[in-house]
Amino acid sequence: MTDPAEPTAADVLAAASAIVDAFAATDGDRYFATFAPDATFVFHTEAERLPNRAAYERIWAGWVGSGWRVISCTSSDPLPQTFPGGAVFTHTVDTTVDTGEGTESYRERETIVFRLAAGTDATGSGLVAIHEHLSPMPAASD
Image (cartoon, rainbow, N blue to C red; front, side, top):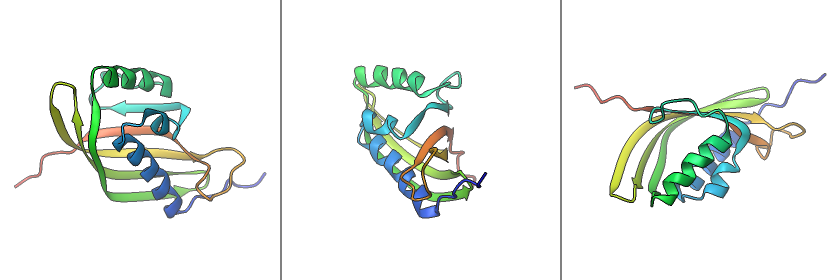
């Protein structure tokens, strides 16, 4: 048995950028296509872990149905960490959304875990997100 390929940092940055770009466009189809069906999600705004992509898609549909949309989403301080078969990506994300009742802006830390899909090489085309975790950014100390 051969060891799995290891993606490059550039592959991980491209995969993470695809997620951020789709989210920023409020493009649910493109956004959810970047996640495996068995992906899990941990958001500080939700009471429980979302056990799969379908659970998150239901929440997303409710948000969009109530008038929610992303106004802007930018990534900074990226850190891709690769290993054979996948990668961990962390960054800071600044987001502004229209909730349907007004705008909200927030700054969060995000972790995305990727795996290479079976049968792919390390070109990045086979990277799929299997976990996403958002945490609130602590207030800066003076």
